[in-house]
Amino acid sequence: MCGIVGLMIRNPALRDRLGEWARPMLIGMTERGPDSAGIAVFTEPLPEGRRKLSLHAPDGFDWAPLARELGPEVELAVRANHAIATTSRDPASLRAQLKAAFPQVHVLSAGRAIDLYKDVGTPAEIADKYGLAGLSGTHLVAHTRMATESAVTPENAHPYTAGEDWCLVHNGSLSNPNSLRRKLEPLGIAFDGDCDTEAACRWLEWRMREGDTLEQALRRGFDELDGFYTFLMGSADALAIVRDGFACKPALVAETDDWVAIASEYRSLAHLPGVEGARLYEPQPERIYAWRAAA
Amino acid sequence: MNAAVDAATRVFDLRAVPLREVNRFLHSDLGGVREVRIEHPDGAHSIAVGMDAPVHVDIVGHAGYYAAGMNKHADVVVHGNAGPGVAENMMSGTVRVKGFASVSAAASARGGLLVVEGDCGLRCGISLKGADVVVGGSVGSFSMFMAQAGRLVVCGDAGDALGDSLYEAVIYVRGEVKSLGADARFEDMTEADVAAVAHLLARAGLDHDPRRFRRIASARSLYHWNVDANQEY
Image: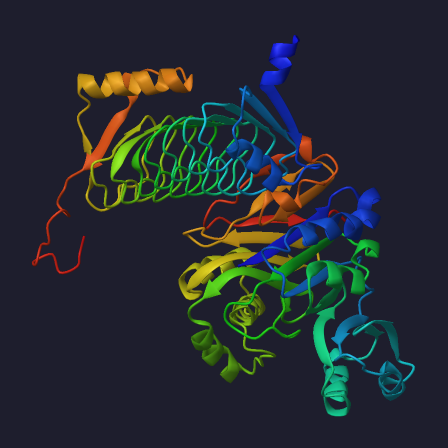
């Protein structure tokens, strides 16, 4: 079991409320996922040529030597075990430098819009450790995890990312993650952990890099991704959800003019302002729902 | 409102009172209480499960998993949507959902009546064992899978694999059926079927012509092992 949470603010005047409204949504899914939690926030994108990387380090990590190693070309904003490194450098060289000098530091995400926080602990602990209530942006994707198929570690927490400005959270289980992985690794696609979800995330990102639209990739996924799933996905300007044909894993959407909210259960939507008047529905199986962030 | 009416009604606010306390009250000797109103359910699970008294319960808002599960004798109304497994294993009484119901509504229910005024998700009436279910809207795929006894009336459409591996339960659908499951087949409506649908619609308070419904029941070809079937059904 796991809990999924998504929120997109349609009314630009309310974007400062994103984290504040999402915090009780995440905590509302604690019983579905008490082990670990994670949040991907999509902000206004950085200018072309700038990139940000979300980094995660083990408890007690001293960030000062890392800041010195990266030098003045990289701005580092540190919060607990997490830091956002912003730079005009080529992200691939920055990743390589980090991997060589600080192998214990994990790159959680990269892009112009995404910031990613994930860790082991209850949703309330994670929300407070990383200041979820104070985060603003256009939309976010979050997850609470009850592990069923791989260890409880920060790397195995969701959201998963691949490429740039792309993330996915999963409620369910896949039965063919290893065959997907065997297909992707010879193409040079490296994996961080051993969670089944990572295979789906990297497979979809690979399909989109090969030219599929998200819709085409997900349609192909109905044949290629074997198992039970509700996937909630985020990109720089979109939020999307899809459920497998059996729809064993729950999801509920609430829409108003001001926001679109998605959660595994109504418990996580009940506090939202205006939810009494929201249009509520369950996503149909094998139907793709996507919402674009207002420019 | 006079004193007798006051004493017969109890109101609980789930934002102020723990659900366990409310359910414990519902399971206690209710004395003269005839009506219970539960406010701010906010999607909580297992509201009014295990009722065993002829009392009216109003759930004012959206309920989570298993609302009114195992109901016996009570008349429960969800003034909103219901999560998975509403009225699962109901024994008697009535449960009404004013909005939509998620998956597995009335799963394994043995008796009583579930009315869902909106749509139902997948697997509505799965393994039904004798209850009646009336759905004002449509039902999702795999509804009435392995249903053994009881009736499902669908005023809208049905998804894929309706009535797969049915036993003696019967389904009536007014709209389109996307596909039938293994061993399910359309059968002619008899006058007894029309009367049954009319009666259930009346109980549900839904106004449709019972002659517009089609009957689906088991062809009973799965009742006996067929060595030549080669696992193809």
